Image 1: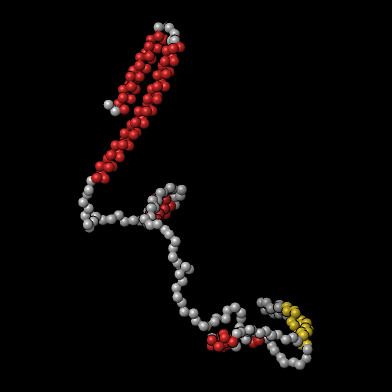
Image 2: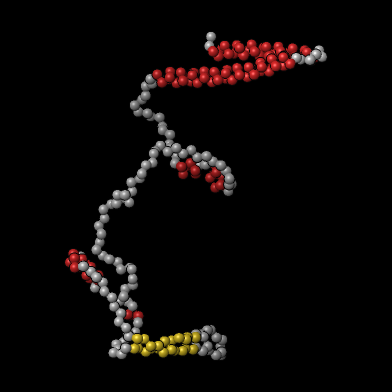
Amino acid sequence: MSKLTELNQELHALRETQFGAIKEMKDTFEGGSEISVEKKQAIEDRNIEIEKLNEKVNELNALEVQEARLEDALEKGKEVKSMPIHNDEPKEVRKSLGGQFMESNAYKSFMDNGQKNINSELKWNPQVELKTTLTESGYPPAVTRSDLVVPTATLDPLQIPDLIDTITTDNYQYKYLEETTFTNNATATAEGSALGENALAFTERTENIRKIGAFLPVTEELLADVSAVQGYLD
């Protein structure tokens, strides 16, 4: 006899005793008599014992279910099934996360009817494990560098003098007039009306003659090894 069967029999006997005690209490109440303290205590003790036995029976039932599952799994593991070399059955097409999103109820409801706040669950279980990705920053590809330099750091200095009037002088100062006021009253007028009058004012300026220059140090090796650098610097 298994332990579970013994516990079930003991539990059945206690319940019958409990039912008998309850019936005795009911008959006593109906007869107008009082129940003794000892009988009340005996019924409470039986209830506690029944509760404990119930817990043991439930634990043993769970253990027996688990044991049966393990035995069934072991028996299935012993079976050897022949597998075909070539499986002609169609494989399940895996959908990407974006594809599942397009087929979700939330997306369709929003696109069709403009409905929001609709929950949809996307099952995403990628069959890959992501590691450190090798990129071109870690292994840069080989390139060929041209010796051509694109001068974008500053404007071409040869273009600036073409925009300014220049003179040759032997004096230490140079005076010139600067237009400091320009009033433009040009506007559309009606037939026979006076035209707007413009106004100009000039201020004499004095500029001291100064020398402007700079130098750029370059090694002899650079000039000898890179033929294009001399033309660029010149």
